[in-house]
Length: 388
Ligand code: PHB
Figure 1 (cartoon, rainbow, N blue to C red):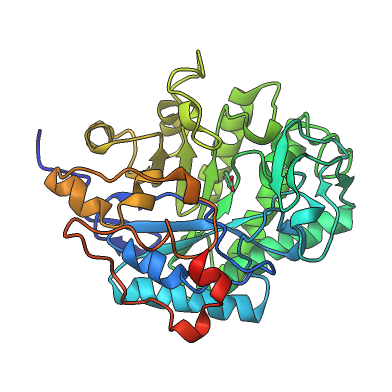
Figure 2 (tube, rainbow, N blue to C red; figure 1 turned 90 degrees about the vertical axis):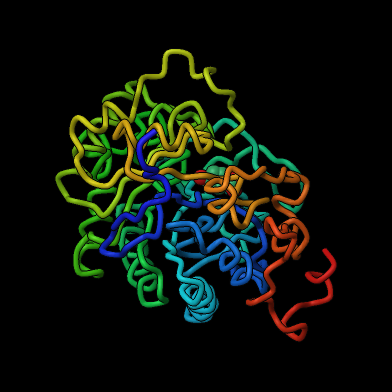
C-alpha cells in the first residue's frame, strides 16, 4: 500500500491533527449525579490524547437535556471549569478535543434527572424501547410536547453551550444529531407531528437543526469549528423515518449549504449502541458514497473500523478521518498500537458504565504502564469513587 494516510496529519476546524484517527464519543457515566465532570476525566482523556481528535462523551446542554445517569453537562460555570481541566490536560499532551453536545429529548427518565424533570420531545409520542435508570431498566416515558417558545429556547441552549465549550478550551464542537436523540426526533415524521414552524413538512422538520446552526454561527463566529454527527438509516432509541434516504439527503444538503466544520457519519451497520452485527442492516445503502455526492467538506466515518479497513477507506477517499470507539476504551495508546501493528487489549464491558477508575483509567499502554500524569489528588476523590 502507498504511504499511510491514517497516521498522517490533517487539518479540521482550523486545527492541525497529528493523524486521522478520531476517538468516537462514548458515554462512560463517571460524572456526578448533577452532571459535573468526574475526577478522573482529565486523566482518561489525556491518556488518549494521541488520537488525532477526541470527541467527548455526550454532554448535556441544559438540565432538561440530561436523561442518563452520571452523564456530564456544560450548562453551568462550575461544569465549564471541570471541562477546562480536561481540555488543558489533552492540550498539554498535544491532543485535540471536541465537545459532543446533546439533548436527549424523549430518550429520558425522570429517575435519571437531577431536577426530577419530565421528558420533553417535538411531540407527545413515546419511543419504543427501554432506558437504564437508577431504579433499573424502564420503558421510555411518554414525553410532553415542547411549546414553540421552548423549542426556541432549546435552540439558544445549543448555541450558548457551543460557545461555552469553545471558551472552555475545546478545539471544536460536535452537535449530536444522531441515534434518535432530540435533533433527530425533530427530523423524524414519526416523532415530530408538529404543525408550527418546526413540523408539518420535510422542510419544516429541518428548521430546528437549521436554527441551531444559525444560532451557533452567530455565537461562535461562524461554523468552522462546529460539526454534526448523524446516523442515516439508524433505528436506535426507537427512531423511525418513513423515508430515511430523503431525510439523509435533506440534512446533508443543509449542512453542505451552511458550510459546517465536519460531518461525522455513523454507518448503518453499526448505528446505535454498536451492537448491531455487520450486515444486519440488510439493504442499507452506501451512505458515505451518497453523502460525498453532495457534501465536499470534512467527513468522519464511524463504522466498526480496524486499521486496514480504515486505511483503505482513506485511500479510497471515502472519508477524511476514521472514528474508533471501544478499542479506545481498552487501548489508550491505540494510535501507537495500530501504527506498530501491535496487538490490541480487549475491553471489559462490565466497567463501561460503572463509576470510579476501574475500567476507565487503569488500562495500560503497550509498555504495561498506566499514565498517571493527570490523575486527581486523593483529596478530590470520594471514597465511593475511588473504590467503585
Ligand atoms: C449511551 O449512553 O448509551 C449512548 C449515548 C449516546 C449515543 C449512543 C448511546 O449516541
